[in-house]
Length: 245
View 1: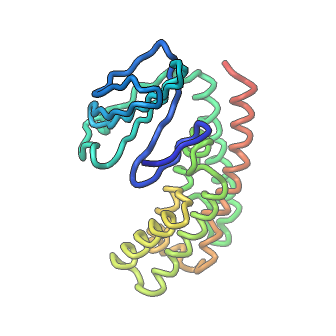
View 2 (view 1 turned 60 degrees about the horizontal axis):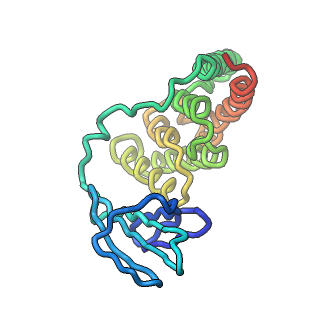
């Protein structure tokens, strides 16, 4: 069983433990009980969860601690709820919908203007993965995949992996397969999960117009475009917090 202290959940041994204190007026069912002044312990299974109920006594009943342990041994393999839409706790306000949409419009407009300036050099900064990055930054700015460190490290690393795979294997299915699997392994091992970056290797391998960039592709257009999106994100967050309607 994993250990918990200070109200923070700490996982261990393929299980997650949640410890909380119940009021003395609330009781939990137990499969066995004891009137001993030290403690009594019982285990109950309810709907695939193991309920570990630790009942502490010291003369008087001052508190009850409960530990709920969910492990892979008791969780079903298939869950139809994954195919159903989540029920939102509350409907987003108009401003929470409006400002991210405006941010996305501004981002694509600015990127399009930069494309016009870069066109004489045969370059373009607008690529499809930046649309997915915009959705992450503007709608879920607090998500781990929207963290700046994760975003830039994943963008740079996955783009470089795509160039390396193309250099070794050339165009084709083998280069795409190796690049994608290596990108997922890289993000998983380093803990810098940023899903939009996984498309960068495929974009380079199949994009003939990008081949001349070689390893500069690690910085442009993916990482360079993310700099602009990060600046726009700060404006969107400010507007969401200060201009609500």
